[in-house]
Length: 483
Image (tube, rainbow, N blue to C red; front, side, top):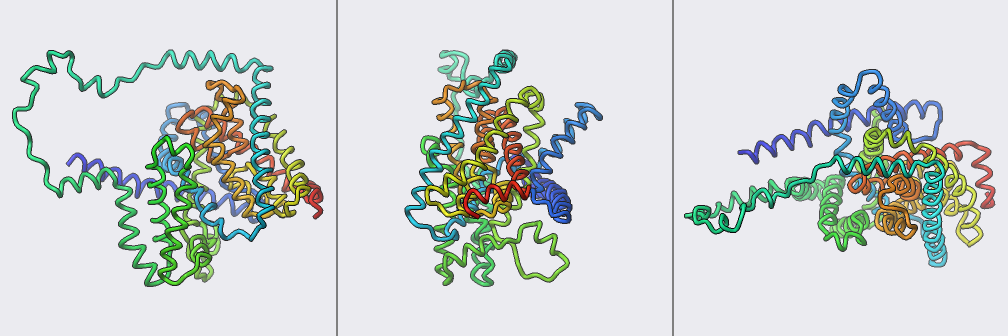
């Protein structure tokens, strides 16, 4: 009964309060996007709403007080916390759709890989050294270490459950009174299955979606969204179950994306569809903004699984305002250490990457895509469109940059001799180079670094999009590749 009550409250939260909160976030996003659309402003509404929410919470704390603001944050955290926990899966469509990219020669592929890898390490080193030098010059790093030591000193060690449940001494352990006099009967098979389903409720729900809704709907009507959604989510659960030893190299985004492509391809072949056809059904381009903007017009376009994840990614970007607000004092203290590396690397990427790639034999459109290499996907697309670059290449570069930062970021920072407790350098470096994917990893390992990474990621992307939105600046960058 207790398990049933717990699951019922979990279901109400997951399937009522979270969707309601996500819908409100998306409605505000849509309003901001509509204003931008009316004035022909090329800037993602999700990033704008993230910044607006951050400053709104700061204003609330000043006007309403800490107690009321904390209550407000707890309410926002219901949908926002959910979207941040699931943020990784929302990046998978960019990899699932890679087979739709234009054909490219093997030599150009090798050149792209070489420039990408070398540039990634150089940019990581530049961001780390600039940030670290600024902290040492401003004397901020020493204060941060002392504050961190004070925080650790105030923490109380957690008691392990083993200590609480173990006997006081060996005599008690051997005391016959502690031995059960009768072995209870094993529970019936029905109870065992109920316990297993309760422990894996999310998996059970999506298995049901796959078997009882997705398969019949797909093979009877051709509508693939429920099937593709279930396959993608189950592949994500499977990728998360990889042992930590292998997960360091087999990132869940890569593993789940590959598994999703293979499974939906096999299911499409059974129906007689090609991979290209099923990938176009995976993402039709009908995200919430397109659906709501054209709600009054007659349209037959229905969203695919990729559109659902793209919609939820917008909500996740907005939700990054919460860790930023939680560590607002650190953001204020290290503002200069955040701004200068972001401006320097943004300008450097715009002026260095396109001509270098073009001179090495990469096409002009793909060379321009390199200027958005390390931006978060929500900002990489408009920046690339402003420059006239290849959006598919920009999306792939942005996602791979994020995965490399998530997998190798900590190791690279150790090679660069960045202290483990220097959350400022860690956050800024990974935010500039690996955007939201690395930020989602930092949310679990170092929340203060995640807050700085969120701000750095947003500032870096904003600067780049602003530069590319200025017609003379965009024309100058295009001129570097002969356009």
